[in-house]
Length: 560
Image (cartoon, rainbow, N blue to C red; front, side, top):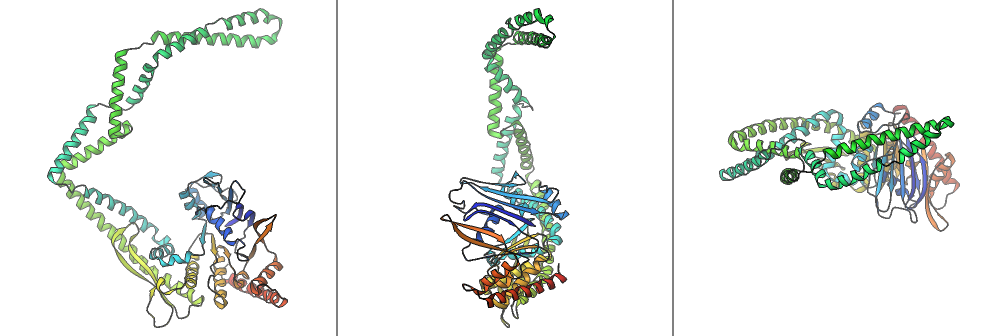
């Protein structure tokens, strides 16, 4: 779960530290207090887009830190597969430092890429933003919801489809390369033969470039090497150490403490004699052959010319040679190789068709179960006489995800035909439909933390009460963090946080704090009563909180 949130210098927030709890966490506050900034900070830390000018005015950087506690063995195993090791307490720390020119994301103090960050955080948290329900207007999202629901059942099959589809594409590309007329084929064969001969005639061998480069560097700097070694020889053969040794040796018998210095001088004198011998030996064997230098230079030119044409290294040239030899064999035995490729493509196509058909059948069976559960959720959310289903069609091509297209369809009034969501549902209805979907997924989803940002848009009254009950239901198996403006939802909170805006020393700041029991009642009264909060409103708030506890207890007896 998300245990802590720390924010610094982000928009209106100078500094905010929040400790979230398990269960149902609710955040409320006046319009414009900065509720969206709190959720926005989480989104940014998880790899979301960083808005322009998000750094608080006058600050050098902004900083967001999320601290997760992971205790499930399977979740820890999946994180370890992504090279993330929770500490002994199961703690995983995700942080983001936002600077004017760049941003830096870290997990447990190790810098990570945006792609890896998304992979890791996808195991820990799911955010339903203010407009995420609009994604229900896109058919591709509908199939993704179905696949997420049946993920464990279809995982191996989808993996096989992905691998087979990759082989299918490879064979299609290979077959496309055989669409040559006779003249083009012969011309390509002549050109490849020329390239193969050019590489083979060069007589390249592994490690040759390194040897030649080392020799060439020596020849190019032979004069400088000789001059420097001559000066070095003169330096080590100076009598400085010898005189020092003689002087210390003459007085060493007067004080035992001088024995260490004397030993060191003996060692230094011995080392310098060895160095002198090594320099002499090197210079005696050192020779410069003008013809060898020229041959080395020419050989390097040949190698580098081939590298420019066939690859940046000898290894790459050898790989290129093998590919050209293989292509030449294909062109020489053109019809037979083409026919074998056609047969292989047909075999892989048949396998891909079978796997896609199996996945499609599995999806259609699961879709009935999923849509029936979503329909039940919609009835609970005050959709009267609703019909909800999923319609399938087949693409005219294969994909790594099968060949299905699928779309949720709905009828909200008796006698009306089922139509796509985008043609029927309003924004508020889409929000409730998404909540019904999230509720169903919550039973199979192992993502521990769910965030709902103003899921209550466009609802009130009895529907709001139903929404609150759904959120409490989800919180039975997940940590739920919800931003709301409705008292029916806020009353259900296990933990209630107030987001407030204030002006301090001429600057606007946003703060967040956890409310005590009586403060929860006062905040509920504000949500109920608006500008003027009377004792009657407070009494109503207390009654609402009391009733909410009963609802939570009832839910707990069947769910938690």
